[in-house]
Length: 412
Image (cartoon, rainbow, N blue to C red; front, side, top):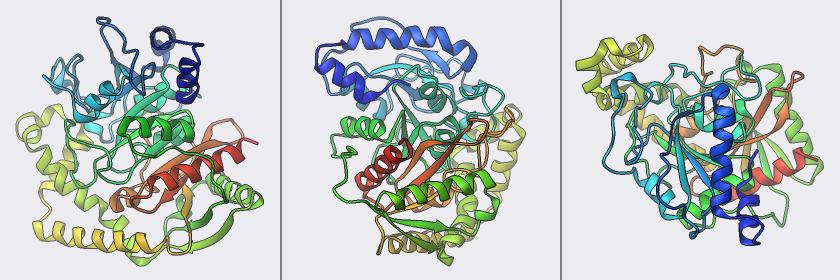
């Protein structure tokens, strides 16, 4: 895979140039994307490649749920075939302003929901890459680009990162802008990022926003809470073994490991995620449901119709439970720095018609806390198994540092 850190280091040392790095990614897309199908569109070749800016030389794929002025934005639906926005979404404009090259739009599932896309998993094309940020995760995993932008409303960054064996970073809610994207659920939609490693994704996010998010080495081993949730029995034996292995390696490397039982408020939060998502989605997509219902997939259409039937009182009660879950999530970090949990129920399903389930992700999206998929473990067939580092709200750097600390130890 391509490394953000390595590319920028080589450019700074004069061993490479921004133009050469972007040209290589274009060639790699031409060579590999015929099989992977990670890109919905590739940027037209015109104008100079930026040679200045902290991200100059980094080719970035942008999930096709974000508006882009120079490429169509289809939202994964034939309803928007050929739609050409007049302006970039804020996060896309940020990317260009920092010198990065938006090399293409990556494939998304239909309106970033559940209908599987055409994208294949680079580790085995028979397996799903996950979703909804299917193309973003797969493009990085296939080594075509060093970084990509995605979104998470349930588990759409962390889960495909786990399935594809890359680092996926879902920041604290609203740390990065989500404007200029096709809204699905406005209190859940979160902009996130993909790169080869925790160090790479942290550096990309840091240089993109100008905040200190870099995953520099920790002076002391982190205090890790081994999170025991009400849905752990739905994780595969391989995934449970991977989490246990990661905890054992962390403990042997000096980390303190304590088990943390899931509070009742967080369990209830997981249960109301669907109510909040469904109610907001029905409002956000009211036009498509009213005028183009037959063009929507049956699953999405049914979800929107069910969401339309949710009473405001039920939505308000779900939001109240979500607030309780957020408060409970803050208390989880009174004695630990980060939590460790499964990133998904198991390896990517051998079924291209599914994107997997957000069971192990959606409550953390609901509570708005930062999450990082840590790659490095596999099952006996070599398919990736990701473990998830979860941080306290607003402490994204700490979560990224802990993820990098763990990832380097899993690799040794």
